Image (cartoon, rainbow, N blue to C red):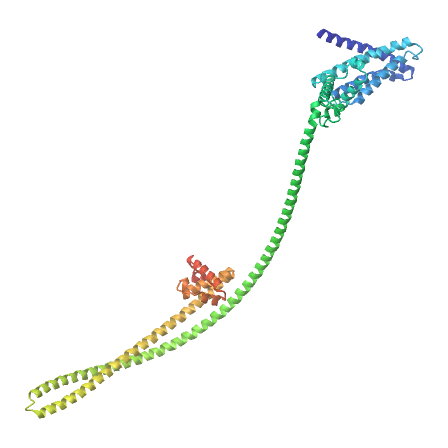
Length: 500
């Protein structure tokens, strides 16, 4: 095989070279005779080399799997042309048939060598691609001239790779048809269409198994189409729902922005109203504080005058008390004198009783003295009681003076406390204005100051009714303000610290 290969290669190259050289000389002379001039030297190369180039390009496209039959047709056209030109170089074709045949043989050798090389390349390419044979053998054309064209047509139309594969498919169909006739009889009209598919699809180059698998493949394709349709519809529905959801979300966001804008405008309006109300309250509080300060000054002046009157009354009470004490001392002296006299009268009465029989006159005198003494004792008791009443009156007057003095001092302290509270309230209001607190924060701090002032720091010491009346709010809001004020006081809030 190696020797044959080498011989074929070398012989083919020699034949191609001889054919090309002979064809070149014949075409060159023909070119000069037809007035090609100097182009006669290039004309043979263009014709013969064109055959090689076109066949080479055809083989390259076949190797790449993208054959173009036009190239091969053009190469065959150039081959016919070079044979005709070589035959015509000997003169008229029918004038000298021998010379014409001799000139035509030379390019035929060249074309045969090139076609042999092309066939070898195609064969190698098909073997590498897994195709063992290509084309219907000559004996098939000779032995079965009627059915062979149909077989060749199927191979070319439906790309059956080899003659062996085409024969195998034909055998399968024949066997399958025989088995159907054995089972259902010669008349196949009653055979289900699915079982007739291998015979129906025979012209299309399908095998028996491929034809029988068509219903299953059709069912599978239908199932896949149904699934794809369902999937597509689900996706369309999902996209529609997503678009609806996006539209709803967009509408909600738009409504939310509109509502938020409304809240912002309302908040700004409420803030402006609150600031205006706070300024009004602050002005009213300043006027109230000023009025309270004036009232406190008047109360201080009245308290001072009352204190002076109380001092005068106290001095008079002290004088009366001294006189009452002197009167009480005199009454006590008289009481002791009367007691002494009473004791003397008792002694005298005892002696008179002892001497009753003998001194009747004395008894009557003693009784008279006794009556006088008792009268004097009653007078002394009356004076004593009067002295005690005067002392009690003096004590009550002194207590009244002390109460009035304490009341004046308490009033003075209360006025001073109210003045300090008014001043602290004014400074706290100024601090709240400077801090630009909200109305709620202002109300909370006011309740905290009420707890410190009226409840001694105990939130329960200030009633909700008092808070509601002071703030002009409901009891529920008053409860919330008292709770917030308690938390504020627990965190260390004090009006004096804030005012400072």
